[in-house]
Length: 253
Image (cartoon, rainbow, N blue to C red; front, side):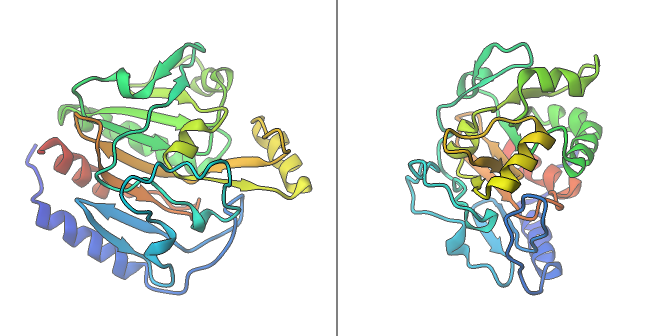
């Protein structure tokens, strides 16, 4: 497969930024619509009009975990930035076994995809598209991990007895979402009850529901973030072309 030059990747990013021109909405992304977004690759960030980049970035060394004080707006999360080491976090496999994310694929670039769960139709479509690209991504030498708040039981149920060519992991307590800086919470009791019933996910001891903002992080073989895509609008996902371009870039580092 011929690799795209870095300049072409940046052109793609700029085209996407131009296409997203317009007023940004403000919502909690808990089933509502928000037109804000962010695309970042190769150390070059492009923020959508109407959304300050300050809403997404923290200084170098930011851990992504705000000490439990999570925002209540998806557009106010602080994702880990490019150049940051992957945080130490332990998830659960579909069989319920612990899995330390940093240790799963030593000396191998990894694509980490955060999604809201098997209950989300937008996430299901995204994973279906990803399934068509897995072979090409593996040919570039990358492994793929998909992380959601679904429990191991829910992950097994979503597979329906079928295997995948990538790894599904459970972040039921949202630790990974917090550490990667993409977690936000819904605090309205009525809305929390609706979400818990609909998703089957756990809530916090305070009775809040924590969402991960859909995101993609691509890490090099040293587990340093080299590409990051986070979009607070839960109806949008990274395009397959941009995902492949980012994978090709990281594989060439």
